[in-house]
Length: 394
Ligand SMILES: [Zn+2]
Image (cartoon, rainbow, N blue to C red; front, side, top):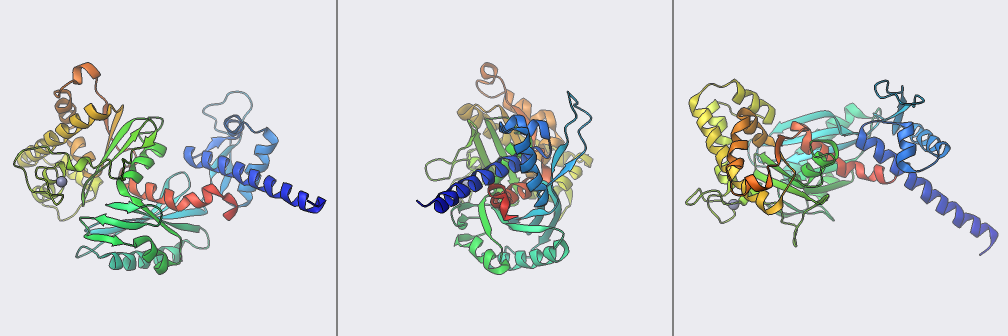
């Protein structure tokens, strides 16, 4: 190797170390939503001047900003805060049977915009890609150049091959082997990644929400397409042998129940549904927050009876999952959070009445902390991953 070549190799490896360190710092800022400089030094194990240089480069690239020291927890010398910058954003997409929701999410899991476009019929994959591309074009016209869009992440209510975003099966949408990520990439010119919605919700809740710092929890989401779940076990998402784990929506909760599209009958997701609640409340459509508000405002006995009936089934399914998985925490999203909030003690009572609960104690059952933003934040993680991995992209 000539001295020039040796210098170049050394330069390349220094570059790689620098990019890696920039990534470590940016991820810390992203995950915490803002962190004192002193704590960056402590958590990275790098020396103060190196951290200062890394933060300086991230500021220059408009990925972070520096703020005043946090006056609330002042120990020792005041240390400036490093906060997520506003410029980098990811676009999140959640196609459902009745609407397509598109969000703009900044670093730190901040949802800046959310657009929900109702569809008259269940969209095909092509139609969903087209509608999404229209919304994305409108959003980009508003956002750029103040923001830079790094890509699109899609939360799909179905099974997704994560490597290329092929939707293997989304039963409620009626999509089978649809290359949705590729369609959307073609229609928008942006990089697109896709994954299962419940798994993305679980990761979002684990990074930014009620599951922070909890290594074993179950996340269960009720959406227009039924009930999906994600399981974090020992700090890792549980996929199972073929990636189908977490289908808690198909736990059998009653004999002789309603037939389910999965081939079974009496599944949790056929017995616990949003539609009967909307009907009883006289609503055409409502997101989880609106449904919760309507349930809390209602004094109709029929509504209360339906809420109790659904919570009984939900509690039965949760009892089985708790015995199998021994979670510390159960996080309920979508309309499951809404019905649980309408009668907060009912679900705890049902679960506590189940087998073994006295011996093992009971996990806390809490609503998602991220609320209606959960899937947007989870999907955007897919889009922002590129810049988190290599901040010199920015
Ligand atoms: Zn089923």
